[in-house]
Length: 167
Image (tube, rainbow, N blue to C red; front, side, top):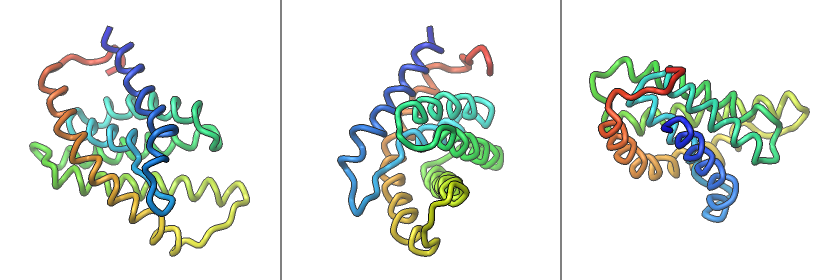
């Protein structure tokens, strides 16, 4: 039952990402809820579990968005793996560590999105993109992480050592 609920919960997060969260944009930037969820889970359960979550959330985002298929999945999987590696360096993740990891993960995912845009023939100014898009998104993701990390910490405590079949 839990795997089905996970797929639905990540689908709901992806749906919120492409429908509701753009309405909260300031200066063309809005938070990345699936990224924050995946990074928080990576810190709590490790890279393997987070990569599974990233695959599910990424596929949902790729199906629901108008961007090139696979871009979200690639970015989320890379961010999840990186955050999972970061989680191995600490005994117990804290909110300040979660904020640092979501900043790094945001840079990684946005970097992958920009690389895919460049490979498809798009043009952009890297310094301008970093200053006007990536940094404000990091700030937005900080706020989102302050709400998501305690919630997923509680879910982690409640579910204990329950794992998905692939974990």
